[in-house]
Image (tube, rainbow, N blue to C red; front, side, top):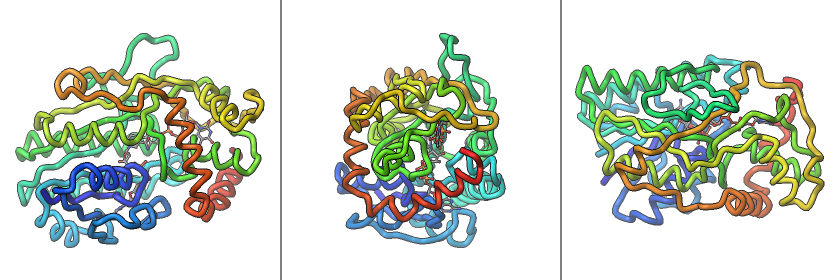
Length: 329
Ligand code: NAD
Ligand code: TDX
């Protein structure tokens, strides 16, 4: 099987390539990645893949690469909410125009397409609401990031319905693990703690995220790719809802620090309160189960990874903190 993996130099994509290399030696992979600030060629070092640097909105390049592939797994995106509030423009380009460009090539060549998306397309839930997101939850995105991801999901659905594209979609909750950019919550706090800086938590810290280890996400992607029903949406989540304060406390404990030594900073505009995933379809239909049973263990191994791989994250850290400082966070 020949896979075209878009965004394979990013956090989840590079972990997907590493997992696939280890567990499926029969799969050959071409990675298409523009190497934006979030992409890092070093995240793929030593892996037996073909790497193509380029934009998913480049029609000629995409045409050539999709023609050679049996399936496309589409991770590439602008992925950070705070950046989307500062400047939405690249989000429209990559998440909407880029996805459209890939879909058109897949349509021309009848290529199997799997679209990676987020639970944020569903908006947010109240803290005391017993409801969780299901594939039937109406779309209600809040930020330029989540609205452009919602738009990209709807493009995929339309290409299935109008053109018979063989596509599936998965909407996953918040991922953690190695190779995540230092702008994101968990790596930002881990690398801050390594530097002796207190965790910086937005607003009151009551906001809840539903955490999943990146390998559990990527194994679920393989389940959908191999056994998912064409045209269907699968929600991916591991039943791990935690407030940001709880995660910050767990990190402080991992560093042997006072668990209440947290700095509350200005809130994110439009900050979604809570995400929660009901992954019943994935579990019941495809038999997927998370293999990282404990968030705490996964978090500790992630802390170890950042401790042991400072040369990977250090070059980006100062610029990320400078841009947060400029936004008063
Ligand atoms: P990331 O920002 O770490 O990586 C994105 C990658 O896409 C980078 O390597 C970047 O260089 C590349 N890219 C960006 N624009 C491109 C373009 N125009 N052409 C080619 N490549 C381009 O993101 P991530 O956290 O790994 O997320 C990957 C996917 O998973 C995204 O679609 C995101 O919406 C989705 N997702 C992420 C999470 C999460 O918690 N991180 C949760 C659910 C879904
Ligand atoms: O310094 C911080 N302090 C803080 O309190 C940062 C960077 C974040 N936060 C909060 C905001 C969120 O409530 O932590 C939570 C997680 O923040 P992010 O890591 O920015 O993730 P989130 O906005 O929840 O979106 C993530 O999960 C869904 C990914 O970035 C998306 O790509 C994915 O779709």
